[in-house]
Amino acid sequence: MAQRQRIAAGSALLAVAAAALILPDWIISLVTIAFANGLVVLGLIIMWRAGLVSFGQGLYYCTGAYAVALTGRWTGISDAFLLVLIGGVSGALISFVVGFLLARYREIFFAMLSLALSMILYGVLVKTESLGSTDGFSVITPTFFGYAPHQKGLLLALYWLVLAVCAFAALLVDIYFRTLAGALAVPIRDNEIRVEFLGMSVSRLIHTKLVISGTLGGMGGALAAFAIGHVDPNMSYWTTSGEFVFITVLAGANSVSAAFIGSLAFEAVRSFAFATLPQLWQMLLGSVLLLTILFLPQGLGSLFSRLRRRPAEAS
Image (cartoon, rainbow, N blue to C red):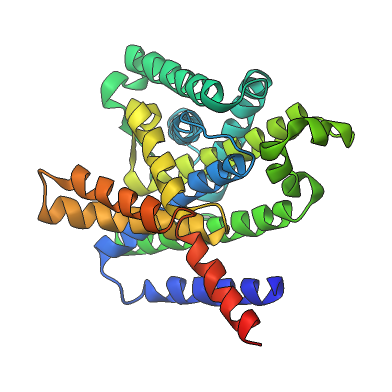
């Protein structure tokens, strides 16, 4: 069954990649941003399976974005693949350091502490004039192994880069979920003491999940920085982290692909709501979340689980 799911996901990915040749530019931009943010949501799903909700994912998202922008500004490096790697490493380093503190807390304390760390970064960036203060600064135009596309070519190149990075990350996370450390997420959420009796360190397992989540957040921020072409402190503001939690609830934790589908649904609904109801778009988004909680409490990912079960039950 897992092999069939991967083949189906691969086929869908190829279809989405090929669709860029006929899609209008605004849809390509929307999907690029949605999938970049989906990487951050994927990191949140890793934590959510263990019963932890982070309201400070903007910390890693912003760190990855600023790492890309500053590396390009200070060194002149413009290769997109290298800069995305730098963004991921920067998110991993930050999450590794703060993980020693965060791994000791649970429930609301974990959520609020993660939010506080993100807001500390926001305050530092706002007060630092050399980093653009509240205005931020632009990001270097990326190249791809020496190839420097422009306009439509650049838009397509970024789109395909984001899809490739997301596909690779989703595959690795899917593999991780099938390992012992990944499978222990639910037991950690239900009863940490029993996991400790098995000889496993819960703090170390959570620390590992934090690092993976931070790496994905940094990579998502790096890709978003390319897509937007600009970075600013709002990338670490609490509203940004709140959007990621919103998308996580919308997506659910049942599948890896749900992170990207939920992110795409969120961006689509927000764009539609802002275009049709510019004064009430937040209310429309809130209504979508309310309906999701009422009728799909396990998120959009639960729909795919139901569809997979039906053929099995019929046979």
